[in-house]
Amino acid sequence: MRAFSRLVALAAVATATLAATVQYDFSVEWVQANPDGDYERTFIGINGQWPPPPIECNIYDRVIVNVTNNLGNESTAVHFHGLFMNGTNAMDGPVFVTQCPVPAGNSIIYNFTVDQPGTYWYHSHFGAQYPDGFRAPFIVYDPDEPYAGQYDVDTYLTVSDYYHTSIPWLMANQFLTLTNPTGSEPIPDAALFNDSQNINFQVEPNKTYKIRLINMGALVSQYVWFEDHDFQIIEVDGVYVEPAEASMIYITVAQRYTILLTTKNSTDRNYPMIASFDTDMLDHVPPGLVWNVTGWLTYNNSADFPQPALIDEYNFYDDFSLVPVENEAPYEPDYQVSVDVQMMNLGNGVNYAFFNNITYVAPNVPALYTVMSSGNLSTDATIYGTNTHTYVLGYQEVVEIVLNNFDTGKHPFHLHGHTFQVIERSDDNMVYDPSNPGTINEYPMRRDTVYVRPGGYMVLRFKTDNPGVWFFHCHIEWHLSQGLALVLVEAPLEIQSRQVIPDDHYAACKAGGYAYEGNAAGNTVNLFDLSGEKLQPDPLPAGFTARGIVALVFSCISAFAGMGFIAWYGLSEIKTTSPEVVDIVGEPLDNGDDDESK
View 1 (cartoon, rainbow, N blue to C red):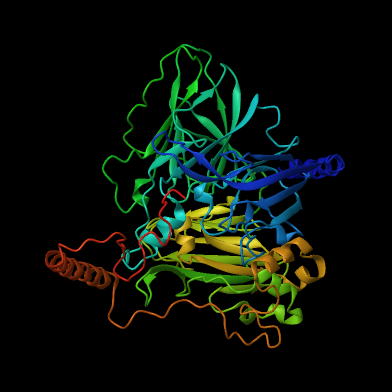
View 2 (view 1 turned 90 degrees about the vertical axis):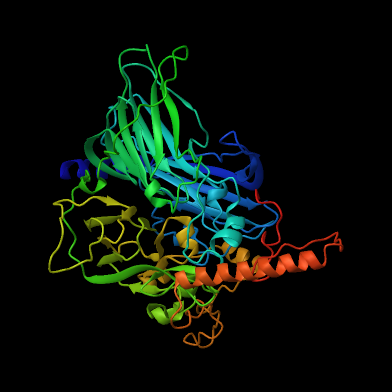
């Protein structure tokens, strides 16, 4: 495989000279759609269409994406998930990490060179927008890939969960509320294949299909299989792997798998392909929820389209055992970041997510802009704020992240700007013990998104060879909104000396009235003065628990209901033409927006 690496390096020099410039002009707009056939609602689309178009390019191409925000009532930003943005950290996209939000009526340009092949996707990284439709595949073709010539067709297949109600409405009225003290995530209404259902995936006999699978959902991992068809896994998250025989995969939100599937030699029947929710990730399964979606490998449009056979168990391939084509032994760590995951309530009664008792709160100034305006003080983590949970990393080191999950759920964690070696991943309910390590593979699997099991731990390692400000967070959108994130400022002095922030990015800050220099609080005179920074709410009073909050909430509801009945009985002759519906803390249930679909 080292010989292959040398050949790739030589081919890269030749290919780079043939690189093109690929330009996309995106008008971000509201669009009506009905992907599951049950409910039409408003989505965030591109150029009047939904789903948004994929971005496609060849390795070493320069990609320019001109984004104009025509939503009218929301800001936005775009993240190109999995792309390293080497030397162009400002193009990464997460708001208040590498840029300001782009206000309605304004534009921004993302301009970068793609120097890595594989399967990626782009999505909004602002205000939980992407589950409302702002996401699509990003495919980077590679003529010199190790599997060139081994397939006939190159295509993609997305899976996702789908909500009939808009995500901002669910956030404000159902999820981040006093009435949801346990942090129960909203349940999706449907599963989708390629943003639809009952799709026909047209195939021909005796051909091999390269299928790029992408989970673009907000919450649930999904099991994916093709009835009576095995396949080979050849890439995960942009990393080529040695071929691994499988009949089913388990794909978390934000992960990508590329497979080679060879069709049968007969066209006498069609075969179901299935994506099924991991229902263990749902706090409850509502009656009537259809937690899977079926499409068909369609050999013959005139043949029957059978329902999938029942299975006894999900026997999926464990990605931990995948071996990268470019073999690398476990890196030796220079620096360790150890974090514990917990979900707890704060003094406002809302359930938040924490790394080491810190829940992420965005700063007033994007962290990258603090780097660029702080000189030598950029190496001091203090200036990036208390609740950004920032670590400053050196250049050309190996960082080890030890993550203990003290929550009862699974969490897929994503690192911007890098792939990491997955050194260890435990079974359920195991705490990391350095004196008793788990299984460590000779050549660890690498990818940019990996899940930790309930009560378990994982050990990740990566090289700090890509100066930038990088977000590390749970990719369940509900959990990111709860604050399950931290910031890695990698080689800040190298960022200052090698990179620039374009004028149109600064213009977006100015148009939105956002600070764009100074520390996390926006102070430019004394960078250690954090007065005015955004902080997490105060803790709960001693003795309060989530269970206690539930009891208190429902006691209040009962009390208000009783008083309401008395008032109704005593005032039954009084009529009102403008009734107000308020919740128990006096806020409108719809957060000021009567349309749950937008």
